[in-house]
Image (cartoon, rainbow, N blue to C red; front, side):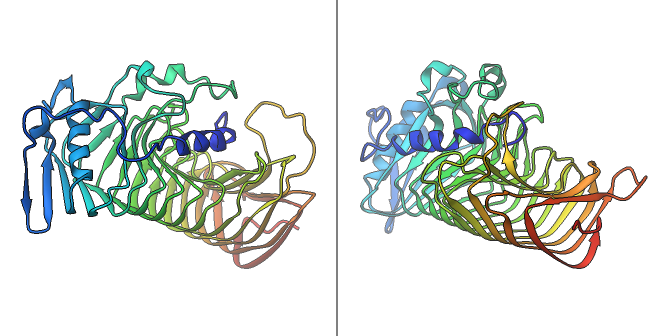
Length: 418
């Protein structure tokens, strides 16, 4: 997250998310209206929310119909499809939970326009709008739209100034999922994060459109926490905060062909705020374009970390910066407030980080800032073929470095710092 942001609440948020599972299908679990209308082909079953009483008129709360369809689908066998036809549905908050023991694959085909309820009293602390938990083999697709209707909630976001604030709901949460695919969907105006992954494995997202106004608070496009083998590609993200944020405990994360902006760029962290944070490793960000963002590629860790952790083996390659403030920044004195009391160095070790073929224009005079921990200096930071001109064209951009062992090769504009 960006300036006056909320990364320091990530762990608290993730803990709350992880506590939602209570076993089986949970939520309203209502009995469907009339008989259960669905059809079964060979080894597969199809459940249409309209058959369970959904109105899709943009006025009626269709939550009961969605939960009834989900309950029967999860209790079915073989390949299962849930269809949401075109129309406007008012729903939520809803929790779609497994395990669905006899289901081999579950496809949720969303063609409609889904709108979140705006009554914040219906959401629990740290709760989400739509949550998927403890499922294997879920595919979420169909070209539909998820509208968080965040404009009425954003004035209630006190988190930039109050660390004990009530968290607004994330639009789509995925908790303890395996072998998940989300593809061809649109998310607009989330109240908080658009998409959050927690303890997910083998997760693929592509052809996503995520948007919220540049001034909307904490509307991160995608947040990833304690997950592995995650792949996001071919998506456009324009929000009021990070396009993608990679939190603690992640491994083997690939982010490719993302168009980002406006927003706060692609971030690792913040890391090192809480004890017992897990390491980050195996991150690849490549073939992305940043336009008008307040940061490009940013790695941020808190000073005075309560425990030791590491972020290593990360590659940022073939990134285009168009009028970006802080195109390349490592900040190991991260503090989202106007002042921080602690002067102790960060205990997050950063090493084996590669910036390759980073090019474009910088709005800030310092285009490359490598500000590392004096307690654990950055090691093996490589910059290869970096060409960042000032957007104004008036003079050459500069670099700033401290407590870092960096190696430079190929084109270096701005000139390397010593």
